[in-house]
Image 1 (tube, rainbow, N blue to C red):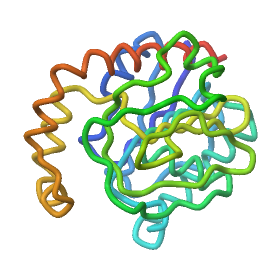
Image 2: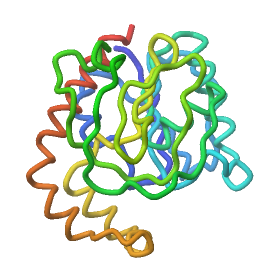
Image 3: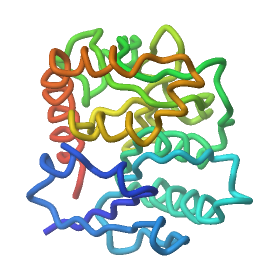
Length: 231
């Protein structure tokens, strides 16, 4: 059975529906919130998944594991090990490939539409899917597209939403893994952040029931196609 390394940064930003879609794989977890450090080798793993978290890529002085993770991602890319990064994971992927990660003009939190670029419309992870779809967002940082990457999707607020680095490394700025329970938990945990950003949590909760199933259909399709890349 193929073994996948999953890096988690905080307890409440786990795999969500990604774990369900990868039920046939051996998942090994690296929980940096427990150890304070990340391993530096992708040896022995068939894929690498890097999840989200509240820290910034530029905060390696506070979170030393960030540099270790970027070395891990670079090794995976060099060895052509499939990589899937979500939110912070996408930013770490971009930084690992030499791109800048920085604070955006405003925070993108809640339900937003994302549109595929011309490159995204022909990408194997998105073939047959709509050109535009609603996704769940929770971020303020963004990234430039690395020189060896292409941008596959964009939103009105942030043009770089999904990047493909090399042949099999993908970074998703949005959260397609979330469940309704996770969204409610994030709202409770991050109440002060929402207030400071003048974002209405009740509006997010109101939109969730009508959009979450579509997000899960999208997420399952993405993960199933990503799984086909795993040796």
